[in-house]
Length: 255
Image 1 (tube, rainbow, N blue to C red):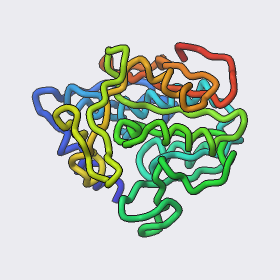
Image 2 (image 1 turned 90 degrees about the vertical axis):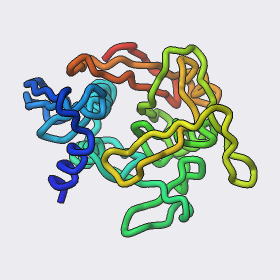
Image 3 (image 1 turned 120 degrees about the vertical axis):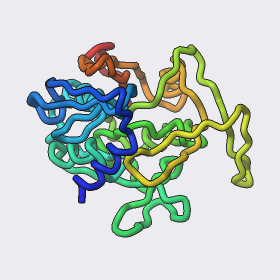
C-alpha cells in the first residue's frame, strides 16, 4: 500500500527531462541512499529508502541536532502520515499525530485519525515536549491563534520546529483573510499549493511568509525564535527550518 502510494505520487511529480539520480547520505535513514530528482523542485527530490523529500530531510537534520534526546520526548506532529511521521514514530518516546478535517471539531476522529484544528487544539496545557509541522501554517487562516495554541500545549522547555515556504521579502505578504461568517476575502490573486502525496489538489495559501516570521512567533508569546539552516543539501535543495522556544535557550543559526 505504501509503495503503491509512493509510486503514484512519483508519477504525478515526474518530469522526464529533469530526472536525476544521486548517491548521498540521508538524515532519516542515517546511511547512504540513492536519491531521485523527479523534477527541479524540493518536493520532487526523494530518498528511495524512506521516501522523504528535501523539505522533510531538512527538518530531520535540524531535529537530530536540536533534539538529540528525542527518545525521551513526547511529540505532537500536525500530520498523521508521511516520512516525518514515520521517523517520529520510530524515534520519539510518544507521538500524537493529527489531520485537519473541516467538518469535524478538534478531538474527534475520522476513520481512526485524530482531527485537530491548530487554531483550537483539544489538548491540555503543557502536553508535549516538541511540536512539529511541515508547510502547514501558510494555510492557517489565523496563524497567530495557531501559534498561541502550539505554545499553550508545549511544556515549559518545549520546542516548536517547523517549515513554511519563506520568501526573500522582510515582511510577510497577506494574501487572504477569513471573514467572521467563514467566507474568504482575497487580498491578492488566490494562491494554491498542491498536496502531491494526498488527494487534495488545491489548498489555499493565506500568506507568503517573510523574515518577520520570527517576530510573529514572539508576538504570539514564544520567548525567542530563529531561522535555522540545516547542514543538508541535495542538488542544492535545502529548506530553512523555523525554531521557536517557549523559554529562552541557546540558539544556533546553522545546524
